[in-house]
Image 1 (tube, rainbow, N blue to C red):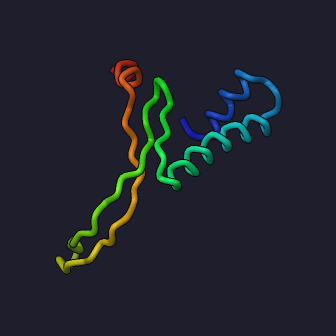
Image 2: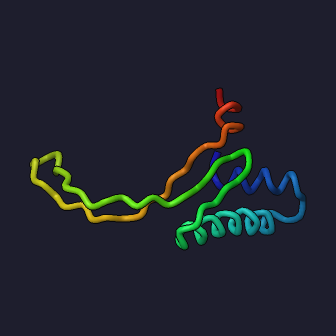
Image 3: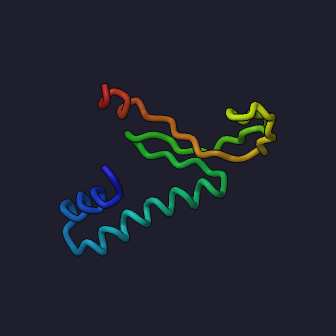
Length: 90
């Protein structure tokens, strides 16, 4: 499933135009991204929790040359699945 199929599913469920359905999906995705960039958690009941995790700086190795490379500290998105989602996938 991709974004276009999600837009199609929203369109079938709500009706209206596909443009409106695409705007709804875009709004949901941009709202999640905006909250994560602010460092907030996004919790969707039955789906899970999106959060931001701080990853420390580290030294990695180039697999071709074996040369050490410094990887800077950064924030990365994290997703924890809800129990309902885990049970549905089993």
